[in-house]
Amino acid sequence: MGKIDVEVRFPTINVYLVAEHRLLREPLVRLLQKREICVVGASRYLELTAEQIATSQCEILLLDFPTTYDALAVIDELRVRTPHIKVAASL
Image (tube, rainbow, N blue to C red; front, side):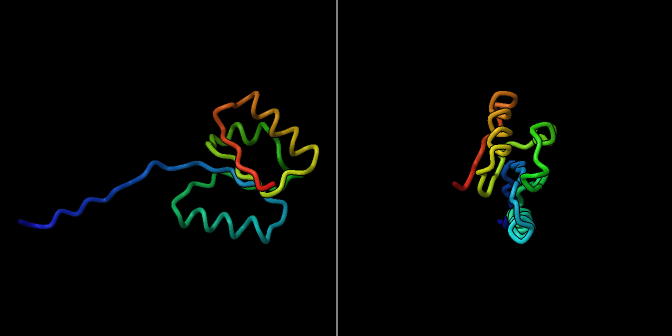
């Protein structure tokens, strides 16, 4: 009998990454992409809006350290507006 090659594909995960510092944000984007995770957006907290996250079709919002009032307000708005998006934050 011949060998059968079967490629197992996992569903793609869409992630939106928010990190204030470029030196953290850019390597994380590359690392996630190497793991075949689709990064649908990346930004700093100052550029962050609930609208751009909601329209990005992300499933997970990954935050490095959301301590500013504006970042917490965006997270609260997203929980109401798009409750299907999971939020993972380093606190």
